[in-house]
Length: 353
Image (tube, rainbow, N blue to C red):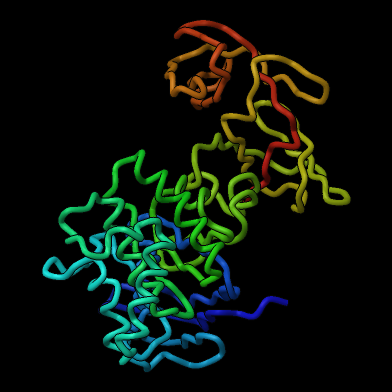
């Protein structure tokens, strides 16, 4: 079993009457790339700041590699932080910025030079040591901040929305670089973001926080395809929610009656229980195929082209609830057009209300 790099043990945080975190317990495996994801006010940044020592929890403990660091000041913890605004020193060279943490730790000058050079090479900026930070692009400055944090060899690297200030193209590039660097160095990364696409692109494990509690956690594929809660289903991309009631349950299969028909889905539920089925827009199809179930006639209400696909809004005959389908590039429909959608019942996810 992989050892835990970090243990959050029943962490609570209150600011006056407001509860920011409510008994959060979480284990971060050694060498993992974990993303704390959630809406503003969900508790993700508060949890990161507690891990870094910038906040002391109202209750609970923080352990790093088995050591209780709850009362330990930030400078003494085996962590470093990369911030969104880079926090570089403008009066220093790039090399001076990267060497700063080593100098503060009393590392001899003769040793600092090679370690700085190696850190800059690691982030692809080996030829910039003598330059000033204002001469570099936003992406380069973010990589310098990353090199400065990693050069001191922390047990855990904390990343506080480090890509939020970058434009979309550069953010996508930096996501790839962050993931590659993390795999290369093997350091445990704990990364905060509110960007669902970013979380899925870089994380080994996603922790979804909402109103100070963990809603869901697991690999990106499971979080997206089999969300554990209604909140996760709607927060992690778009989802059609279908109300239903369990009519029968047997051996991990549940028959759910809805206004759209009766569907046999995987899961556990008690008969006559009200449930919700979640269906991703890309799991609706305009063509039939073996195993697919028709939803009946529908009318297109709106369409949008997103390069890789068309997003099609529609209403089923006799239903008021709007739904969405993500259709291939070459399937072009117009508002008012009639068509029939199909789905594979295996793509339906059973959620408790």
